Length: 309
Ligand SMILES: Nc1nc2c(ncn2[C@@H]2O[C@H](COP(=O)(O)OP(=O)(O)OP(=O)(O)O)[C@@H](O)[C@H]2O)c(=O)[nH]1
Ligand SMILES: [Mg+2]
Image (tube, rainbow, N blue to C red; front, side, top):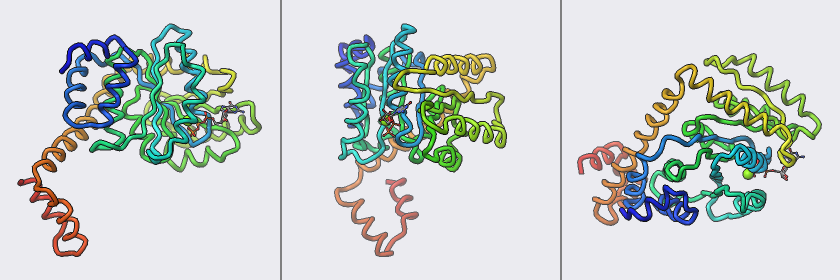
C-alpha cells in the first residue's frame, strides 16, 4: 500500500479522501488493502446518523449542524447517502446545492449512491466511514433517506441517531410504521415554523409513552427551523448529552461491539463470496441460474456446491 497516499488521507487531504472513497465504491482488493491500512487509525470519530422521511429537511439540518459543530471547532465531514437509482443524479445534485454554503468552511462533503461493489452500498458506506474516521474528522454526519432498511443499517454505524420529522406530512404515522422511533436517540421536529409542529411533538411524545424505550435513555424531542439554524444548538447539546449518557453507563463499548458484530459478518460473507465467484468457470453462475429457474436444479444444493468448490 502506498504509504504516501495513506498519510495524505490521515492528514485529511480532501483530494486523497475523495480518491479513497471512490476506491471503496469500486470495491475489490485495492479497497480492502486501503481499509486494512487505515483501520488501526480509526475509533475517534463521532458518527451521527440523520434519517427521516423524504423532504423533512435532513440536508438543510445537516448543513446547519455542520456549521454549529464548526463553530465549536470540530472537524466535520458529511456523507449523504442516496439509496435511489445511481443513474438519477437529481437528488444528489439537489443535496449538493443545498449544502453549497458550506464550501470554504472546511467541511468535507461527499455523496454516495454507488452500488458498484459486491455487498452494495452498505459495504461502501462502512468503508467510507473508516476512511473519514482515519482522516481525523471528529464529527461525521451521515444523511440517509428513511425509505427502508437503510436507516436501520446506518443506526448500526452511528453512535448517535437523529430521526427527523416535519409537521404536515403525516410523518409521525410513517415513522411509527417503519419502527424508526426505536432507532432514535434524538428526535427532531424540523420545520417548526409551520403549522402542526406542536401537534407532531405531542404525537411523538405520546408514542414514546406508549412504547417506553427498553433502555433508560429517553430520546428528547426538539423543534428546529433548519434554514435559520433555530434550535440547532440545542440539538448539538442533546447529541453530547446522549454520548455522556452512553459513557456513564458503559454503553459506548457495547454499541461498538454490536456494530462490528454486524460488520464482521457482512465482511466475511462478502470476502467469501468474492473468492468463490472468482474461482468459478466463466458462465457457471448464469448456467446455474438457468437451471434453477427451469427447476432442473435447486439453489440449496448449488449453494453447497459453491461452498465445496
Ligand atoms: N419552512 C421550512 N422549510 C424547510 C425547513 N427545513 C428545510 N426546509 C425546506 O424543505 C425542503 C426540503 O429540504 P431538504 O433539506 O432537502 O430535505 P431532505 O429531508 O434532505 O430531503 P431528501 O434528501 O430529498 O429526502 C427544502 O425546500 C428546504 O428549504 C424548515 O425548517 N422550515
Ligand atoms: Mg436530503
